[in-house]
Image (tube, rainbow over the protein chains, first blue to last red):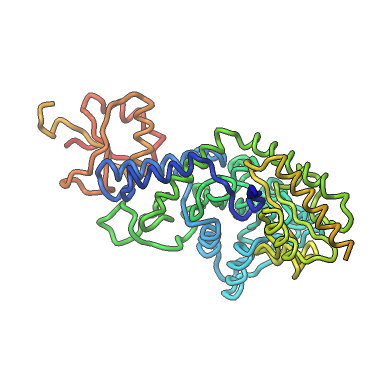
Length: 387
Length: 76
């Protein structure tokens, strides 16, 4: 049976062939440490990384490739910003729909004297910009929030919140782990100070890649998470203060970044708008298909244009983990049950602690696969009512 | 090529990222150049620099000025 992979919000799969080839080519033909030596292979490795900065910068709407920093993943990027910008006495605002990648670093900083406000979202998982404005205090230093929930797919009103933050001189950070590459985004037009991305989801790169965009001027305010070798200013024992070396120490994941370069190039060639359109259509097909089944409950906004290609649902009388196991064993459909590393989001939508079953589609998802899944869910629902 | 290195100029940058940013700008402007290790006698800002012939000095400056954060041109 053909595998039907509906877990793209955890990591996208399959990957573009060009991405796999790019990594193999790097290992076979380049292999060197980027920018650490003057020879042609070292320069070529550094060139691959620079090209990747360029394509990511262009996908995010930044004109400056050196505004892009590479890290292991969005989590490392978020930790860099939270720990590098906040000090005891600072107030931070986040939303009630966050992933643990945002919530846990903030909770840890709370113990070190930062003050945290978690702005509640509606039961459908939507956030009101007015509520965010209302939470602002004199000492609010940062608003940090997801661009789209990994549980319900709800797309947050980031441009409205960016405007509020900008007017008050508050640093605005956006977690785009679920959206970079699949939902149009422009860091300049949307007044985003820092945008965290992951390479292995909608940018179709490999796991172990990610990074952040940071606005000029904000970079110098932020302390790096780590310091070390950069290949630059080697005669000094102090870490360089310029971008991107300020936030990049040690040998990078060049082979991963080579894959990310090909993944991002694939996304760019297809076009984020076209990808978005395709994913909206797939999500709509699925929502329309399962919403009439008795016992099925879908969470979040039913308008596919207001969510990413993520659908969380439950079926009365069956636990999410049982449904997910059935989908895997009987139908070879890969889904993700449970809390999706986002307990506060599940509390918001009322599914804590059982969680939901989550389907998440990608550019390689087909209508046929969705129709097979709809039939599978219909059968599983019937099993529930026959009990 | 006379073989004497004194015929060359070099442009020095903060990091290899800046060198590669400049390489793109020079390629776009059609200015011939070569990425080489920073000569030992020059204080090293990074592992590599951009070498070019004296007659291209103005072209290099024009291609990079205002587009690359910081660079320094020196005669070898």
